[in-house]
Amino acid sequence: MRASRLLRILLLLQNRGRLTSAQLAAELEVARRTILRDVDALSEAGLPIIVHQGNQGGIELGFNYRTRLTGLAADEAEAMAVILSRPIPELRALGLEQAGARASDKMFESFPDVVRAKIEAARRRYRFDLPQGPPPDPRLPALAEAVRDTRIVRIRARSGRPREIHPAGLLLRAEGWFVVDGLAPDTPIALGDCADINISARSFLRPSLARPY
Image (tube, one colour):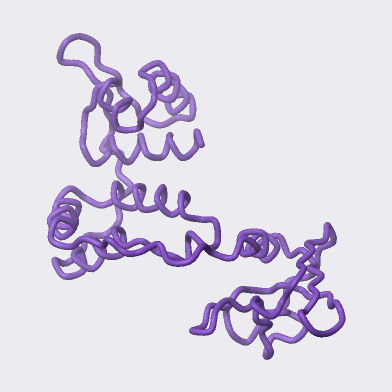
């Protein structure tokens, strides 16, 4: 969590210029004392943080320190506004909804001022009040973790014998979610056809698949 906050402080300072500790604290919803500790940590890491004292003081990045993304055309900024604003049910299903919101904030702050203004204008034009829909399958986040960590999974089909698989990826189709078995990647397994799913502590070697999953 702290690493994420430190990155956001850098992005805020590089895009908005000099800010007070109170402004940073309000933006990040933490105490001013936390911001001051974070600023010390950034300085100790060698980043050019300049702290100005007094009524006109504040915190800023020195030496023209910049790490910006390239600018976007007006229509690209409008498309980015939709991407950053529209709820993505797949993130919720995979247990990544909060991580997606943090990533969206970081991406927005990384754009130059002109691009951020275009994105904000487009956000005011479009709104997405979408129904939540049915609750996601509670097994999906654990399966996604097994895919990331290359953990062997034992599944029991609703009809048939238990089977050990090497979960190489997850696939979303119109019919629902499927898990791609690295041992038989051409025949994904419908999650809806599975009953019990047990994730092993044992790992497998990630296969080289013809298609990305």
